[in-house]
Image (cartoon, rainbow over all chains, first blue to last red; front, side):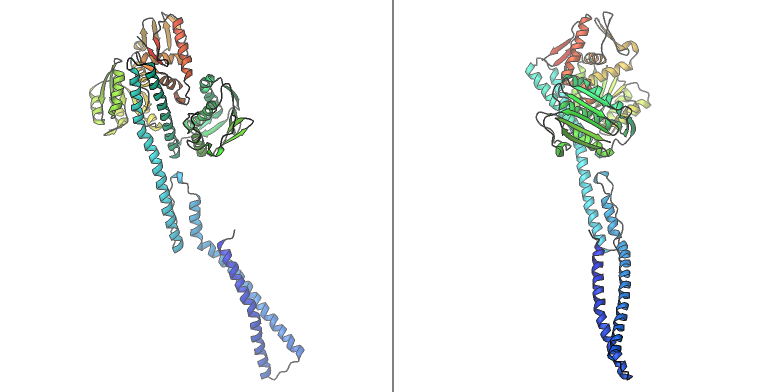
Amino acid sequence: MNKLLNLTMKRFLLYAALVLVCSVPVYYLALNRLWQYEMTEHNIVLDDAEGREDSYLIILAVTSVTLVFFVLLMFGFILLNRRISGKLWQPFYKSMDQIKHFDLSSQQSVQFEQTNITEFSEMNQHLRKLIAGNVAAYSQQKEFADNASHELQTPLAIIQFKLDLLMQTSNLSNEQYQLIEDASKALSRVTRINKNLLLLTKIENSQYMEEDNIDLSALLHHTIQTFTVFADDKQLVFEEDIHPGISIRANKILLEILLNNLINNAIRYSSNGAVIRIRLAENTLTVSNAGNTPLIREHLFRRFSATSADSPGTGLGLALIKQISTRYGWAIDYSFDNHQHHFTLKY
Amino acid sequence: MKILIIEDEEALAKSIGAYLSDAHYRCEYATSFSEAMEKTEVYVYDCILLDLMLPGGDGLKILSELKANNKQDGVIIISAKDSLDDKIKGLQIGADDYLTKPFHLSELAARIYSVIRRKQFSNANIVEQHELRIDIPAKTVTVNDQPVNLTRKEFDLLLYFISNKNKVVSKTALAEHLSGDIAGMFDNYDFVYVHIKNLKKKLAEAGCDNYLKTLYGTGYKWEV
């Protein structure tokens, strides 16, 4: 990659060198003519050897003078180029720096510096317009998700209440009751999806900012305890290898959500009687469970990408994990070997 | 027992009223901020169900006003906003509980029951039903004066049923109640069976009548 001004400078220098090289014979011819004329006027006669020596002297003098000027030109060009590229392109570099550090989700506006150079000012103006458009679209989309989720809560509650009341009516048949229970179950799944969507939006909106030093080892152990009831149902065994006393700086609620979802996934996708390994070391947390086929890594952490008929989750668990990891600059990754799924969190 | 339901969504308010009114609760309604302010100023309620987003004002103001006037009414906030800030603020001002919509009506009944019990003097904190006696603060249960050893979850379930007397309670509602924070993460609610089976067995062994009936296969009802 070349800098733009270096490209032009090389050409300028080449052109200057060409002109100066061409000027050498022209100077020589002119000086020689002048010399001859002066000789004839003053009746000085030189023999051939002296004449040749004078020619050589002239050529030498002209060439060295030209060379000196070329070097002067070269230094001048380089110096000027540096000054110009520093000054002239400064607004450009500044704008570029602004764009480089721009983060759509951070909700900061971009402030370009005033410049009196038409091209840059025009560029900045277009950039401003482009960014403002993006910011507006982004916040609109976020606001929409937030509002939509809120607006859904009330009708969801109405359905829930009506089902609860319907359940109280006398003389229900078993079949009717099962229909109500099934509807109620589906409703609680919708509610969960809605809650998780809201949560994702809130994390994106930079809520849950309070941070504490949290004893991750203890919290992880506690989380596993809470899930034991559900694991017992499937006769799952937890194999814990938890390094004690590891603390981490984060928001407690978010960290709990992250751990809950990681362990919940492992339980949900394990077959009966399987072993779930949870390893907490100095900088990594790995949750492993048995599986037959590797999952598609690229899609895994996207919203609603993992849901299928036989795995009725919310489809948002891994997206939540990803979002929370991103907030704290942690890395969450997935790998598959020896018929084991591994989810690894590096913090 | 008098309950005030402050809720602008009529379908919600009426459903709550319908569920609670057969359980010896008398329900009154307020659908706007000003109506709620009037009612809470003049009357005393055992429990107030308070929605936060009301036409005409913020529900938290009603709560502050109650507390400023030293009123003893129990308050449960029922909000569509699952916002931690609101929850902390509400509880700090003096709400007794906070429920995020949607929830099961049986869950609401259990919370109301607990709030009312907590507000009353300690002798009212003992529930007696024939041979069964539950001391809520001490978390102890006796049948014919013989103590029954229940786990925390079993005790919790028993109270849930007592506060939803003669109501059909679904397995889904019980699962969500028992699993709390991680509610609904699982679609398999079989763990509810285990707790109920143990509770039934312990009560029966102590000589308690079978009040807890299984209905329609997966529903339960505490019949008195």
